[in-house]
Image 1 (cartoon, helix red, strand yellow):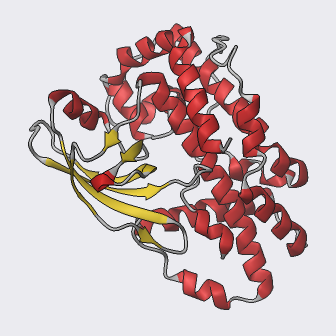
Image 2: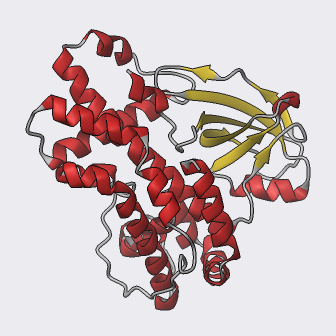
Length: 323
């Protein structure tokens, strides 16, 4: 069983879990408020709701207060997800303790934990061990640890963090259909520099897989299925663009009915969708939305998205591990 298969199973179990209904109700109560919009704009799943509450006074619009019960529930479920992330990271952190913060999917924000967590036990009765075992087989771990041993250099924790985030920013800035110009220079760099970069790429890829796992769990909390793009709604699917970071694709699709329109109106950057059976093929591929143009109300206007495709390890940058 791969990481993606283990995640699918976990998401199905989450959807059926009684705590999910309670959390889903809490999310619906706040999602269409100014507070909910501010939280979603941070694009860090449940963590965004906690950060939005913490930083309420720093937003340009007035955010309504959220009751402590809701914040405690959100905080408790987020803490459960973080604990799963920590277990998945164990092989890296054991050998490279200073890299801990660099593989944290939530390392761009700091939550000071001002609200008491409730103990919702969303994952009680759900087999998380299999997922953790699969993450421990992630090829990025082998690349990172091998490169770290070969590098033989002293690296501070903030250097790990800055390198990983800078590389991610550069990859995102050029979009899923392109690659940074420095890839050509990478091949010509001295051996010690290439080893250093591979170490950071390994950490980046592992962090990306964790981030996508967290996103799928978040989507399972408020959706019963992934948004599906297929022959029934796709107008055009561009060729898959493969480059030295991974694969990207552009899709034009039609909001064919009101239910689908509602899904599209809620779609946001970083959402993961299923591209299913395009033009008679049997391929089913997960794609992470990185840019989109969507109609505000009219169901007949096309939507245009550019996505980065995920591999079986939920990694959007698998080619980085082979540079």
